[in-house]
Amino acid sequence: MSTIRRTSDPPRSTSSEHIAVARRTRRGRLWRGDDLDGDERAGRRAFPARPARDHRGRRGPHSGVDARAAIAAADARARRRAGRLTAPDALVRSDDTLEPDLVLLGTWTVTYVVGPANGNGANIVIPLDRLDGRVIKPGATLDFWNAVGEVSRRTGYRRGAIIVGHRIDPDGALAGGICTVSTALFNAAARAGLPITTRTSHSGYLAKYPLGLDAAVAKGDHFRQTMAFRNDTTEPILIRTVSRPGTARVDLYGAASLGRTVEFNQPAVSHRERARDRHVTTTSLPRGQHHRVEDRSDGMSVVVTRTVRDANGHVLRRDRWVSVYRWLGGLVLDGIG
Image (cartoon, rainbow, N blue to C red; front, side, top):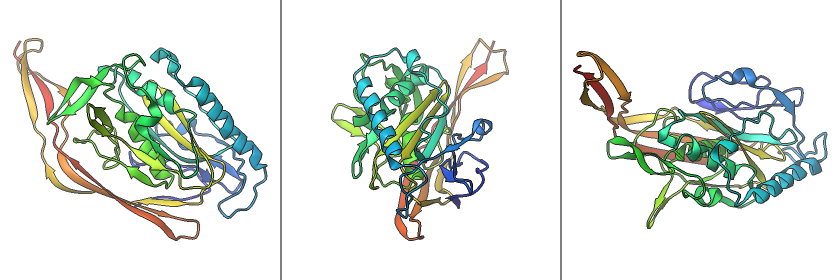
């Protein structure tokens, strides 16, 4: 069982199930973990956190005015950006220090390959920019589609890949690849211990996501599939995002630590169905040579259970997320040249 706990040392990442959350150290500083597989661990740094009150209601060493003012300022910046049309290349940000006056509640990073499958990155960069600076008020629910706003060619989106049947259509729909952002947001909220109100898995498993913890979104004529979570705390929650080519990160910040412990069980896999390859002959390769163009992915059912406890160890909620993946066939080129 993988567990999020406060500790005096930053965690060591051992797999793609690495959980990156804010942790208090004995010296009163905050560690920010920001990697999926540990490849950014060298860039992690500590910075002072200034909570208004901790989870027991005690006032910290700094005034809470700073934290709430930081959230209000970020909200104002987001409002000024609303409706602005910007070329996708201009939206790429690589901020390392985001909100030093706040406490990091949960974070997740998804790595991806920039290419036609995600509109050369536009279908990931644009929604990350729309989410950045958004504030979720106490008791409010954030709906992914409502939060990212208009999705159209006018707002910069391009065609990208989607899953169709047992294969991936590389040019299947406008905004294909946007699920990279919804999955990062879902995992950040899940690791913060927030209640997830809506989540659906992809119809086929994609290896860039943690097994059983992806969040697929889609919409079309008379169809809408979203991801949503609720702020069940008494303080606003600030969303900040980081976008680098091939990296999408979502951070959730609050004025004070929630004092929650979040546990995920190991994914329980059943009903596995072996994936199959599709072979296509080509004269571009010498006879007898083979080149894999698309990876294959087995079909399976996956169950992940999350348990959230408060500072006293009492269970706040227990979630059971079921994902049913169909097998996705790979594509192999067979040379006959």
